Length: 259
Image (cartoon, rainbow, N blue to C red; front, side, top):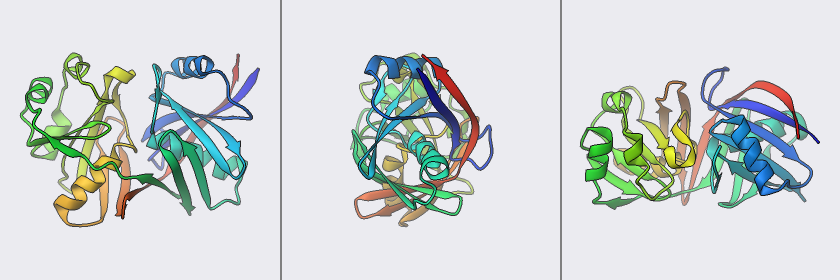
């Protein structure tokens, strides 16, 4: 069996930036084990598979070690492929997923994810994060992931996490964030339990980050940067109980998988 695969750099207007995702369009689903093995072989933070169902697309995402419920950058990458190669006349794509219905719209080069808000709830569990990062956070919240807030952008840039400590945690991953020096907020994301020591740009994390910083900064539209080594730029907006996350994407390569 031959499968067409695209590798897309999401949340970047140039190659070698943003977060790279593999995208595979299927006529029908492969077995879970086959999709997991493909993701493991790709060894990127996410491999996305989608199948067209009526007017919508059903999408699933796999890290090198497991399937996840929500992934922003691989959804953006999948939408880029559909808009460019599969249905170029579309202006909106509706994805059915484990996190319910997700929409992506296109305006020029800008793609916008429409995701459900994941409002983080405050927790008193600060000690393990002080140990894991060597710096005491201002506060810790949680939803799908832990959200750990620090004093300033420099702390976020300089963090060297103890990944073994982070593996002791019970949620998907850990978002660290602070108010930006020249931007509304910055972040990084770590998910070693899911085979991702540090994710370059994490769209789904911004479903927690955006409502948090919107309340703190008293504004609904914000500019954000994930300050990993590759880095990524996002425009985020709270609209009722949804978060709109916008960014560009760039194609790195196309290839054929032989299985």
